[in-house]
Length: 401
View 1 (cartoon, rainbow, N blue to C red):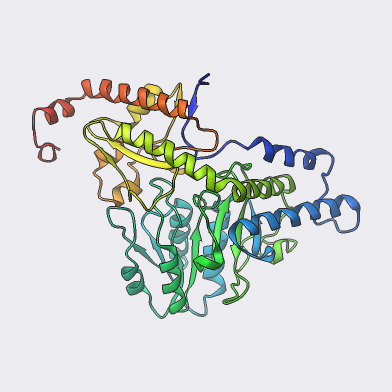
View 2: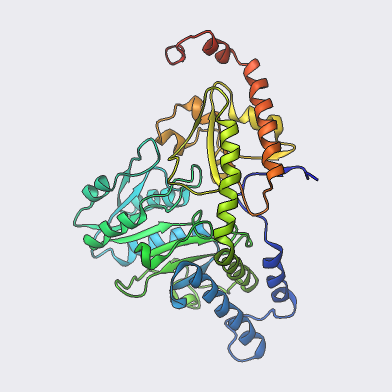
């Protein structure tokens, strides 16, 4: 039985897996101690739970437990990583290299640091969403201290060539930070094999609770040091003070464990569902896939339906289907997606795009429903669209626009 509304926005956030919730619940009421209370059983219990969660998280990404720092989420992790490096390595240089399609948590942090004297190079991307490693290498200067390139893009799912980037960073003695919020738990990510020095990710993208995340900070070859951005108490090896969110951390740990055990099968199933969705929708006239066809996440698709307005399309089925036209963090803005614009899309095409994020609880029935509803909505919107009529009559719309 199909249950409405259908949720296809798993890249914005995920529901908490019931098994994650079950692991968390005792830490709200029975085991409510402060993990920093070292002189009684309540504190020891909480500390033990945090230590166990740290192991679960580390295991998923191939890190040592001491390399995992708990934060309030990926945005804080991004800030701690970039600002922390900028302050700690100020004696070495002030140059940061990033990319135009990064999440706002990275771009806005870099913009903030520019006001404090940082020099930031923002690399362009090809129309498939990938950076050019040769351009990255050419951008490195003697004063370059950090390369900040995301693992997987939140809007188009494109996977950047992380191993190649890390090899370039190593060769030039520059630290490599990646925001892997969309990649961790969805595809195999291993900080050792991938050569990552610092990495941010979040619980709520992998069926854990909101308000908790982690930062991986390499301990050797090279040993990475960060200047804390939050002072008081010296928690988390002095990098992030504040009473630990024990239930949240337990949830993140359990979510990571489930991803480690089930990711392979889950990815296969979701890729098959996504391919069905794509085959049907790209079969409609004047549609296009945004981003690289192969080098991307298995559960995400971003499609432009030309000659209609994406917002109008979404409004036509928003009561019974949850989708987005871009990043959840910028959906309050009426601007077209800067990620899609960076691929060379016009404002019109960017505005006419939908992001489909499938997830753990997505069913074949829901995908079939989405295909049916979107096809009907697209056809209906186009009947009302003067530009569609002109396109069908063979007008060269670029010159009209």
